[in-house]
Amino acid sequence: MEPDCLFCKIVAGEIPADIVYETDDTLAFRDINPQAPTHILIIPRLHIARINDIEEEHRHLVGGLYTAARDIAVAEGLADDGYRVVMNCNEAAGQTVFHIHLHLLGGRRLRWPPG
Ligand code: AMP
Ligand code: ZN
Image (tube, rainbow, N blue to C red):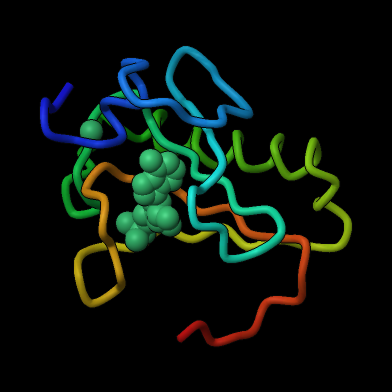
């Protein structure tokens, strides 16, 4: 755990979150500032700051973020219509919380390319 990391604090239960899914390795909760009717963040419990910091040993953990996204999409009723899963890396892409997280967005028509 990184003491100054917001998402580590959510993992530790120090900051409340609307948790929708959890496994031994991953946690998912609703985004506090949703950009779509469904906007869920899926994170590893382990602190990894950015995509750039993903190591070979994290392969299974990172894969687990996607299987979580798949299961949550079904639970949220998004699987058939469609949804988007995206991870930002560093400032130019809009990363503001430096603990990797997949955004799962759905429930409306999503434009492409993103802004
Ligand atoms: P990013 O800009 O890709 O780093 O995404 C960070 C996301 O975290 C943003 O969509 C924020 O709205 C969201 N966020 C920030 N603080 C919280 C919080 N306490 N609980 C839930 N989501 C949060
Ligand atoms: Zn963290």
